[in-house]
Length: 269
Ligand code: KIV
Image 1 (cartoon, rainbow, N blue to C red):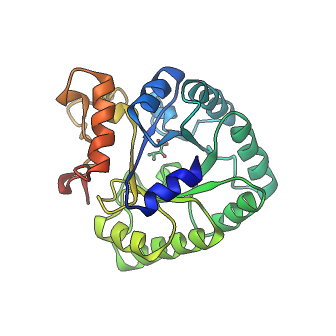
Image 2 (cartoon, helix red, strand yellow):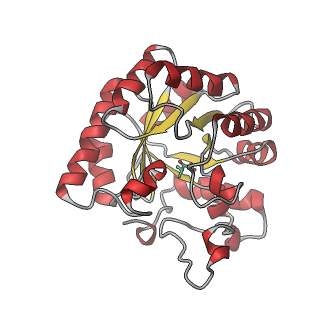
């Protein structure tokens, strides 16, 4: 499955990825032609109602990964490694990654560059495909001082480029870029052989990802706590607003990614 997708990317086709947490939506997404389903630790916010992803556990991740696998047996499945499951040592990271693979994932994703390059190399050497998540990394929201665009200064842009190159050399299958300037994402995508997937990273990545609830315009977390102050993130487009069918909204997302009409400049930094 991964090889087939990699060959498609080589032809210039864009990858359409969505977060998914259960079998019902997994089935709809598979039928709509979504290329990769991500069991994101964003489930802490969109399913559990928490403020961030910091309370998500391996049990939560494996539980939802099994459901997604049941609904979409023929689609590439990527699962997030939650905070605390990969940072301490490579053996623990391997054990937890393997648990996600045994639950139905084809690939795991974890956050950060730097020290995490060794973890990526270790997992890949042990047969587990990896996606590296760079730019804004939600598990570090407290260190980063909130939900902020990363890579705006020359120094931080250089750091993201170096991390992406090191991850690519380590053999990761994808680099996911969250909330970085479109110009940086373009430069980075052109400078490594590994495909990139963007969220708030402009149209020039090799593919795009959105959180399902954002695509459907469901804002129950921060939005419902303080509706007057809630500002929808710039990179979100509500595809359900444009139709009255969830199936068609998902299909339209896939179409918009493939024909490069999403993200438009107004969704990018
Ligand atoms: O957890 C998640 O949903 C993610 C996306 C923001 C890419 O990592």
